[in-house]
Image 1 (cartoon, rainbow over the protein chains, first blue to last red):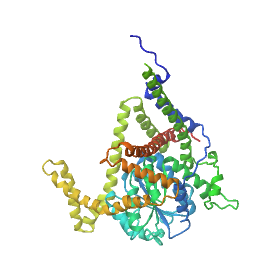
Image 2: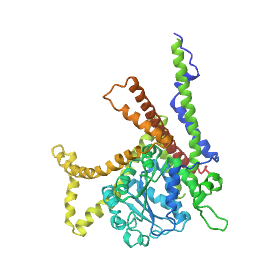
Image 3: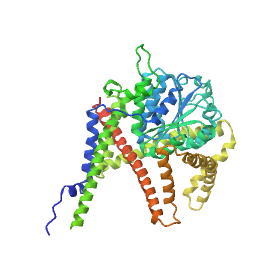
Length: 318
Length: 200
């Protein structure tokens, strides 16, 4: 029997998946090599987190805790947001504590601090403290203990110093002062902070999560259990933009930084080529590639569905 | 050649080895996979030893002579009996202790995951969003009520619930696609930027 001639849609549906991989790879490589500027729209959860952190600027009796709950597999999404938040804190003199309960998160936490502080003169123990890696087995005693006394719960920092002796701790006692916890996770780890730190002590909790986890966390935004959320690379790109537009903005009088304003944000346009350090625009460059890849995927889905319905009609006619 | 250049070359080799699986399974992929598992464990073991065993077991018992720590230490050691056919029951004791902590979290979880969510779902309908949430919540709850056949008017209402769920799954899927593409972007940014220096 003669082999029936395949039409375009038959061929598309029988296409070797490796060609699709190739097209997706090109859709990502080309926008990275030939950069273009696209407008990053800032969403409310990101804006709320920025404003909350900014409200701590210059206050010695306020601090934020950044908990790193992920490993290198999700670094592409979470690392840019961690660096952006750290830069915001260092620029605006917001006191920061960092901690992790996963062995694999420790080098990422150190790397984020190292990367963010490159352009700033910040001192460990005065402007920030890295509490280091703490075993998961004592996660609960630490979370609950910090509700009473942060220094007692953590005891020593990453460099082995007694936390209560550090300058930064002079006006920081518990969640009343360390009033914002941001958990960076590729899992439901943020739920534990909501359950214990939020429910018992009323601490403000925010999340920096992978896009996969974003949909799971939206209900907590609606209830106010999360005060803000950065969702995946898009969230990181939004925060990078806010840092550029407000925190690191150079005023005419030579000072750096300005207050958040919706009007300024609406008209803001950041040219990526003006930002010299590539680390400060990683997420936004990535989102350009993301846009092209999404268009490709939508085209593939549309073609696949079109082929499916055309073949269905053809089979019906036969 | 600096240390950073060498480490970038090694990372690039392993990244390409992992990507080679997209063409087909091969020894480079297998090597990279085994190396990743080994390095992860090799890194975690000393980190846990120095950050858990030394400060929480060795130092309290042998330096500070706080012998109470022996009891939870023995309890922890009972986990090892999991591998012994006849004595594996002993490992249930530390598990039971762990479950007690889970039990402690139940009232708080009930508050955080159920009561607060319920309260939020009972807000007055003051706009299109709250109206959609109301319709979605009611129709989905009706869909999961299996004591009545999904036929007639009731079936039509539960169909609306299916539509709401499908939109929810679609949003989740969209985010998943974005996440996976982001990971690929991260690796390609490393290859083109950190390794080859092509991204300006």
